[in-house]
Length: 142
Image 1 (spheres, rainbow, N blue to C red):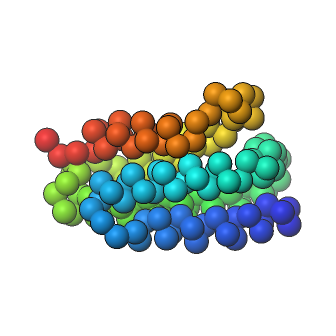
Image 2: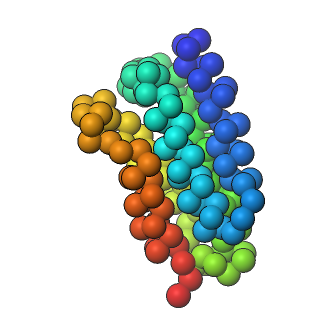
């Protein structure tokens, strides 16, 4: 738990910083996704701990609560970017920012699982660049 808490204490402020990056909202999305991939790539030695704690969240209320807090903070940072995009007229206004943020978190957690099974198959930077372009295409106001 101490190792996990140390990692999380560094992780959450990082995601808040990603959302506060300068630039257009599209640049922020690209930067956020690229930076999230870099964090995971740089933390590959801790990904097994993350995966193990994810499983323990089903059995342990304190771990589940910690994940709930972690996901809420990360979702909040992503939601801020989506709201900024809607307010600026760049992104569609029919978006559910909370749902979108949850999907982004799920994508990276899924990539961590894929990395656990086959590290060679996960090109963090290539996948994040593709993800950014696909995501932005769906977000843009038509």
